[in-house]
Image 1 (tube, one colour):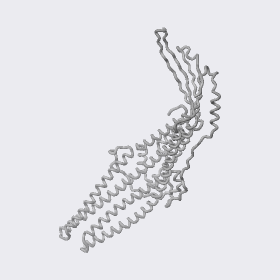
Image 2: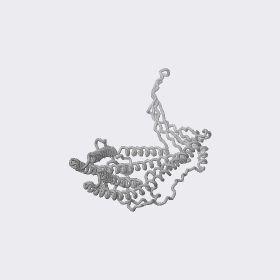
Image 3: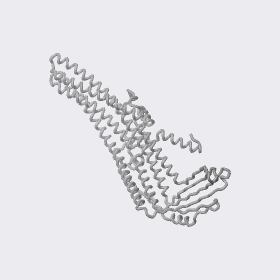
Image 4: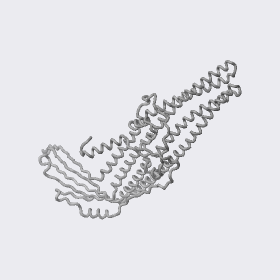
Length: 481
């Protein structure tokens, strides 16, 4: 470290030789690492629709009750709040790193009490001054680190938006599962009523000696099995209500007993667009890319750390044994230092290799996220198309099962067939009715998955308020809201 100390600022002059050396070094070419992102030209998605995907994708269902439930969750969900605070933490870290680009200025002041009884002297020594320090970023090391933290903060914002999409999809899924469970409850109530009526008829026929007791027992077993399914369904409704309450930041004890959830009709198939557009739109893919770019900047910082560093420092101080003459005698200090690494045992080279390995790993993760996003869209499109075919097939099966049961019931009453065939037909019809409801729910869940895989980010109320606060602070410098 080279430096000097001068009495009064008029005598302060930087060492010429040191500045010449620094300027000569800055003539070297700084290294800026680059990373090629893996994005091949993929073929368009198959099974595209034509409907536009809104930013708040659930609005496509046209369900005002669902809109209300998701808005509650976005406002009060604690997992989302954790993601928000992580974003704020990352942004604060980025601001702190950017502050390293500017000089530091500190004010110092002190007082020392002296009491020398042998010399007969006592009193108080006062000192005060300003001290400044600054590292000149010759090779862009500080800039690279600041850019890396800024990119990570941007990735955290994309992570927050991914969390909002995941939360909205989870609420929508639970909401429609509640709707399906309510319909299942109605169907089970109807089936129990039907089975009770048939059981009473069987008991009358048994009393008249027209049938065997086994027929009565079989019908009673079907009735009890249907009642057990209703108990299971009631438990499922309770658990779903608890889950929805927690997603909305409420204790499960406060979950409403009844909801107005209805099993909506799926909206038209959305336009999936091109894979390249999906990569630009999805927040999880954007977050992965930003992490790669941040690692790229850390490579540049690690390479720049192998070159010399130039620091400037200065101080203006004064001291005196009393306050009267404290500011009459000033000492000015200016110093410049150039530190060049010579032997470090390979530490800096190892750090460069470490950052390169981190970047390569993040690059592989980014490629994986891209491929997974493509697969999610293709899976949802293919599954939805097949699910619609399945629903049409189930409609046909239910119709055939109902006709079969009616015909076998007539034949049974006429003594042509035994009751076992009638019972099998009744059980099959009731199972198919419940399965068709489950298939309708599965179609909605596939539609939710498709919208989530295609949707981009949207501004939440927290982000809107944050932006308004920044605008107010920018319009009124120095004032706080």
